[in-house]
Image 1: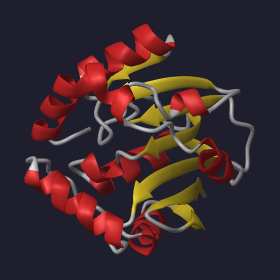
Image 2: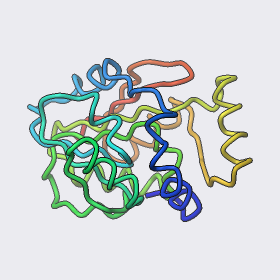
Image 3: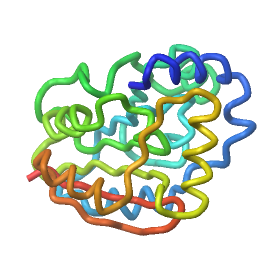
Length: 191
């Protein structure tokens, strides 16, 4: 899910990650998930790391999928979540087997974002929703974040909301920009 340099970074910072990161925006995630055209019973939190975003959600059966074994260990141990080591570009789930997917503050770490979108579309049931909560590289704080991540050796690739929405459309998802700002949310519903 993350470029190799990013996985190593997250493995190293896993014990401190939740101390440094604010809670996920549960309201923004709920607003994105509200676009689903089916009941959400099974949700994947892709790039979910320590389960920070999953902790902001209630209701569905949630599986955290991440490439960082140390972050997944925290999701399991600290939050009691189901976790699976995996690559967003090759999700280990059957076609049309999940109702929703979230990617929170992690999409910019995915080495093959288009493959991740295609895999998500494949795994979603028709009417299921992908909700991406990300940072806008056109926002002043987003530019600063991008520079900071490059400075520490991350392979991050940020996308603006309209660019992400267009990529979702290309992957077979009907995109909706839910909110804008430094942190933004785009939902894509599988056609």
